[in-house]
Image 1 (cartoon, rainbow, N blue to C red):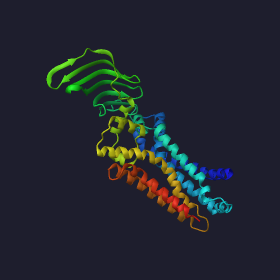
Image 2: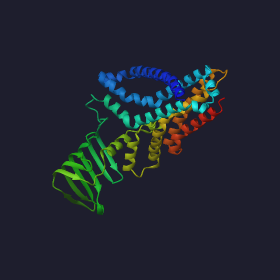
Image 3: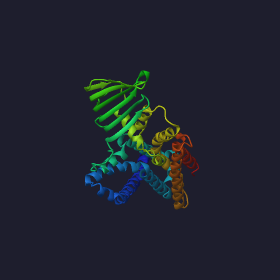
Image 4: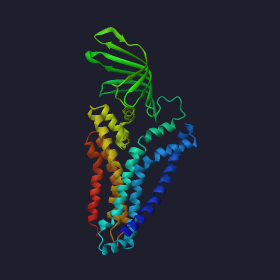
Length: 374
């Protein structure tokens, strides 16, 4: 059996490498031609362009290139085995079709897990990093992306604190021109203003800080504290990652969310921690993103399950008809994916169902059709 598994894997992986490499090369050529003007206008150098595509390529691969390459290579490999009666010989030897398909399922699971890791841990903020590369030489830009954001405001609903930040560097865990506002007991409002601040691991340390307390009941009463060269505040539990999640979510438009799941799970979790009470519309968008982010990589396994029943049947048949049917059903699968994501984002169906319905339906369809293969 090990010898058979190695043979089937070799016959699958070779066309997979060829198809994936060809698709990737074609996509790079067309994409570079389309964005060349942007590169020139932003004065990007060759190392910048290479870095840009190091961030963009994994996203494109996970969204379409890898699943389609797996589909075509599976159709090709199984069709070749069926045309040469290899599947018939294997099954005549007492090996079931399900056992023959174990290497294919293994590859589908492996690629699904690999894309999940790439999206969540390898390149979780690829879109923002791409923007940072494009704007790298634009000194007049209002907002920096990548690791630094300027002129940023956010409200921590969990602790009811409002932050106004001149510049925030998430890598260094530092900020400049900071103003924090929060409510005290008795209706008083307290302000903390500082030239800069940095995250010390479990608390924020403010530099050249000045605090004051305002009593709304007595508008003329202000309590000022002496300016401090360094002020550590343990009560502020907003971590740099949580603050960055606020910025990432603020950049997510409804149109983008309805097309694909682009927000990392860690970013969504941090945002949920800061905002325990979300509006119905906001929760629908973010929960659909959450479930979609988990479900999207499993497209690799689903398309292989779809391809198997159209390529595996033996005997005299129209090979092109089977391949065409497999491609058509896969196209319907991708259309349903986008449709469900849009419906979940709009709040018309439950977020988890919006993310998982295409996978569950077409995986079940592929398994059912495979069980009827003779």
